[in-house]
Image (tube, rainbow, N blue to C red):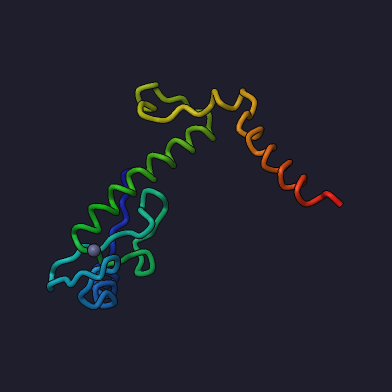
Length: 127
Ligand SMILES: [Zn+2]
């Protein structure tokens, strides 16, 4: 993942002009030279450095957005690894919820809804 597509100066200028001096997420006013051009779909996930995939963000929004991107990129890495059958060391999965064991069990919560259904039928079907 070494090639990182950057916006051309021309595209950056177009995005900045479109933003009209505001953050395109929270609408904070930006001074000239403030604001950061962000990839809406991160390039690590196939996003291109185009005007359509770019937007001007204030520093706060950009930091938040980047933190979210990193999560999304990690998730896509995991999904790709799963699809290709690649194995990762256990430490890479630390902090992940383990949901698989539950699938082998029966589904007891369903029983809780049956009495409610009986009550409804008992009241309505007396004719
Ligand atoms: Zn903002």
